[in-house]
Length: 435
Image (cartoon, rainbow, N blue to C red; front, side, top):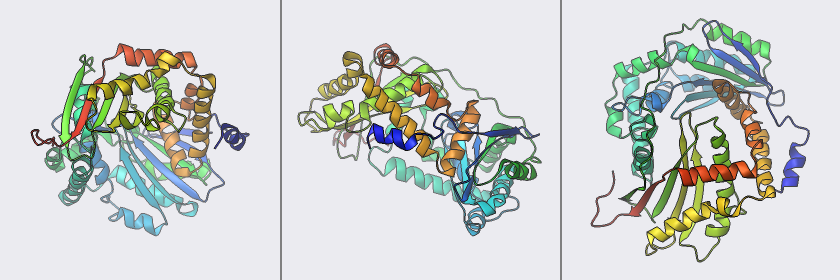
């Protein structure tokens, strides 16, 4: 799709923001709403201000485990999924370092069912030993499948401690190991709910074919009587500087050597956050990207492919360069230099105006088309409200970037911070596989 095509498709649309109605219930629950008359569905999204960074180092994985517990029924709903399915609905959830999110979608004529289901598990989820045993087994199996049984699945268990030290970002959301998950008790789960799952620690977002008056009426009917509780204050160690030249090699059942070079980058809402996002787009988005031209389509490259991404968060995140060796006999130091120099082309060669405009066009199109569905729109307005922004805030910040500001950020990230490098090699008979 060309840039001109994108511009024509989104011409005349409200691309800079999403109109939002707001209210705060008497218990402190923040409520946001966006009406979408062109859909037949309604999505209810609840975003809680709690994530893996609220965990103790000796109890990692509890935030994600509790997300699963919320599907185990509640005081008045024994079978959450069964009742939602009867209403023609679907649901899902996710946990990050900073937040936990739940969303339900159903036909508009069954919208009130969504309010009933979600409010009942906010009020009184079923936190019995039986539910805990079931969900703990599910999460442990998920850990084994995602972290131990797929190539490079435990990469972040090496990278994050090197990058974050004693900070809670130093462990993956799923937890340090499955033994930690297995050790979580019913008392731990109940305490987690008490400390974090209060209405004044959440945002309720509704998007779809429902007007504001009806949505607010349902919100007050089903959520306003849920009592607020004192919330646990987030306490964790500050981020220490990354030591110079940190490199670690690990071994596993992987098809080829993977290189990850990670740099500390600005936290969400910093100027550097948006510039870092643009840097990774320039490096790896599409066939015209720097990595595609220099690595993926270069027969002489020591790397078979490469990618760039950011891990954004409320505290400083990571900008990661990743690549796989084209041949196991390639000199690893040369391969790392090749990857980093390809990234540094932003500094050494600059950025073309048309290159930046292409990125901005794609961001604009992603914002418009990405929020056409009620699910994504509800999540967008919930996250914006949690951060205290309008939904189009991130897009507007991205659009303020210039070629010069991105280059300055690249210099700051690549030259002023010390990278963490992880080399993940196929199992060596003389080395112990990382577990």
